[in-house]
Image (cartoon, rainbow, N blue to C red; front, side, top):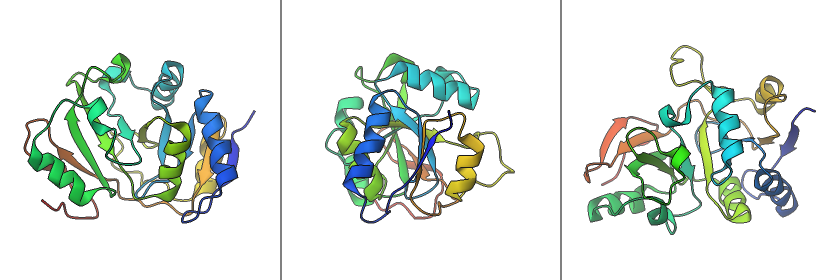
Length: 208
């Protein structure tokens, strides 16, 4: 059975559609959804079977994956990370919501299968009403990764929701059309040594 293709208004998400999408994710579904950068592939972080499905789709092992936790705000980030410095907190406050992934040391609350070999976790708070409403409806962060393989430096990131749907409709449960996506992924900021360091540039400069 092919995935559901669900068009949601990017600035004023329809509550009924958000609840429909949230139900699919809560029930273990895999979703492709828009962010403030590229389209992401995600699931509920507490559902191990859904995480395993994403690993199979990507052809990777969970311990080697670079997953991110997509949160709606900064309030619950400390639950998934070890304590970090005030300079990191200030950088996050100044730049989030926004197109940045902050790499932090993972706390014991992170599910074991989501901890990579470095025992770190990527935290994202996209500037996206769809994402914020969806996470609030699920009441859990979304575990997320790019729909493009990390070692693919040639193929551009897909931006057309319908083309994404045609490619992945038999692999996922839901594709959310939130308009054309971007083709530049988020900047990556390594904070594992308590000093923010940009290791991948994005569309925006990091404010300290």
